Image (cartoon, rainbow, N blue to C red; front, side):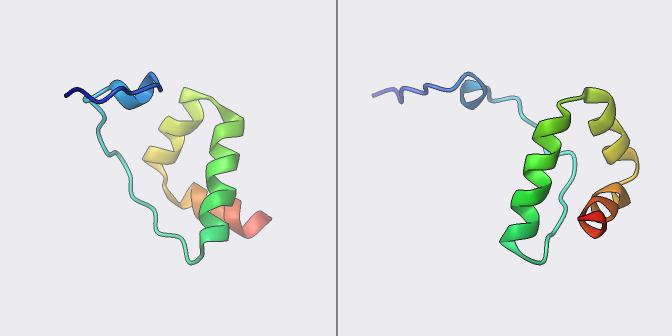
Length: 62
């Protein structure tokens, strides 16, 4: 039996992990996720991949 996947991105099998950033709390992780979703820019995400310390800077500014 095939699984029915409703989300378009969930159906993709070619995802690749580019960066793992450990947060101290769930609150930090949710904050970063919301911030990244708001920016919605490929350019910004590429900058984060080049300089992961950007994520720490975002957390320290809140």
